[in-house]
Length: 236
Length: 254
Image (tube, rainbow over all chains, first blue to last red; front, side, top):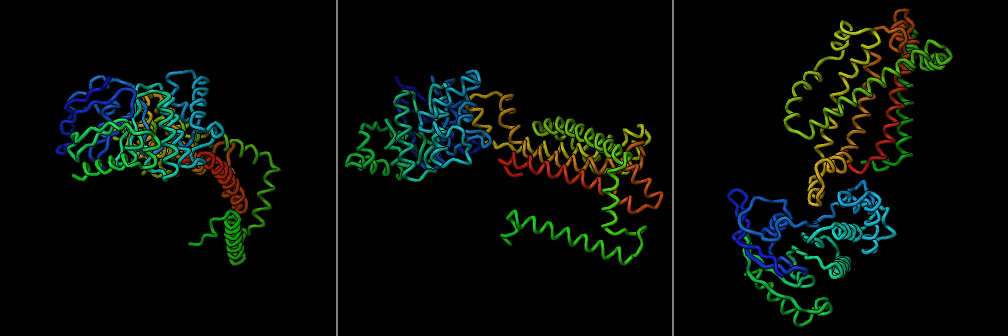
């Protein structure tokens, strides 16, 4: 089943950010929104998350769905440990003790069982990103929204955290919407790539990606041709 | 910039040097004036200061001043905390309280003590005056702290479905804690000073300020210094305690 977004318009004063955006996001798959910086991708995520309700058009079934967010920054509370940061978003859904158990399990999934008591200041960038992923997956939501979540990481950490995200999401099955301006990242993560134009954003193209993990990672001929095609679209 | 000045050992070395220079200058002037009534030498003040601890009138006065100081501090934190929290959370309340705060902060401490002398019994005057002087400081710091919560963390909490109360308790209040510790440090330091000033004028039966004033009337300058030293020690001790606390809550810089 697909989630339909139809004729979405959004302006900040005179500045039109979304100019009648329509798309169909696949349920239970990873959709990547690819577009130049500042084209309105984050605005779209804010609308989908319910943070921004001032828009025209329809987001269909996505309206009112509960979402987990992974931000460009880690957004961890500096005075809380890793496990407390994850448990914090569960307090409205579980007893305190149970929230801590669930948080501990989520940290185990991202390979941070032994670092649960560390505060963010004692963690590396990659570890903090894993905690942010654990928090998003632990939160009982209908979809995952990721706003350029890996852009601040070095290439080696980025690939390992992206792999972790993909495997967690595959096991979990939640719908994921990832925003990025990085073509390679889009190819690496996506089941479907939506290329957006510059402001006001409209859909330029929708590409289904059916490459295997290895092909994506080692830039096979098909991946390279897709990459060239996406660059062409972005530069048009 | 001298990077060595930041090392703890270097810092304590500078502190000892600074104290030594201060005492040397004091000693020099006391020798120059050659009069204990005008400026007694530091060693004599020290002798009298330690001698005071054997006197029950001093210990009672010290205890009474401590109780007044802690009352003033507690009330300042309570009133300043509540008004500061409200002021930080709401622009309207901030605008409403702003002018009153400005008037209070601009009023000379002596004017407040003199008015308090008309309104209250002598034991209450120092506490009232100190609260009036210290609570605006607490209020301003707490308001700043509440307003200083990282908007990105607040947005994260909202996106993860936390309600306003939860956000206030789990994000805004901890964000404000370093500011609250700073506010408490200023409030306690100010409380000691204003309480002792209030005691000098209101003359409660047991008080450091009363002891200081009695010594002044008797022209016992050495004793005035010794009683004053007790106030300085109270301030220094509370400063040290809050420095330790500030380190505990140092996740954000104030």
